Length: 248
Image 1 (tube, rainbow, N blue to C red):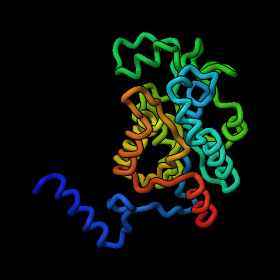
Image 2 (image 1 turned 90 degrees about the horizontal axis):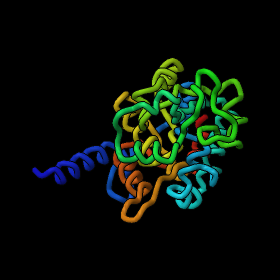
Image 3 (image 1 turned 120 degrees about the vertical axis):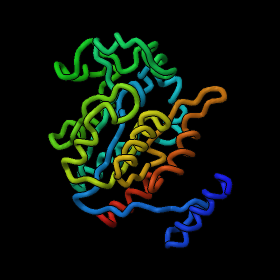
């Protein structure tokens, strides 16, 4: 049996068990929200990714605008407060001592080259300096600095393997995650992969994220292929808002 045949056979088994199939033929498992067990996780809602003033705007700006990403993240943060849904932020941040790393991948080198998410302070000493690249987008501060939102320790590459996001979720008895943020094929996808490995159910919000687009390299398209194959569910912001209002 070829790998392709095995995959299609597996899909058929899941579908026969009552799981609806999407238009691409893959099962659509979905995520049912339960009060007290569901959280919203946002990766990197920061100036360097989401603002025209950010250093990566030339790479991600087109995708951010096309998806209405900034506004859609805002909607998720807003409903988290309205419905008392735990909101967890997993930021990207480089302290001065992190600049002494001796090796890294292509995008790591690119980020360091444009001084993305860099600060001359340590986050545990002074926090993000207002208005600088690693700072929160201004419109999100009312949601993040409300005394209820949990901000994880910074991740240094892409995933939550190197920060305490999973701990923040486990300590709240969370097992269902609504995932959004930046960027789709790097930090967001890496968080998805680790969350799935850790046994969480994960719904990815496809228009509350975006990614770099370069000649011959479309990070957003790559991410959407992968998250569709990995996540329990992939929905638009409007679709997830309707589900939240119905179930939570």
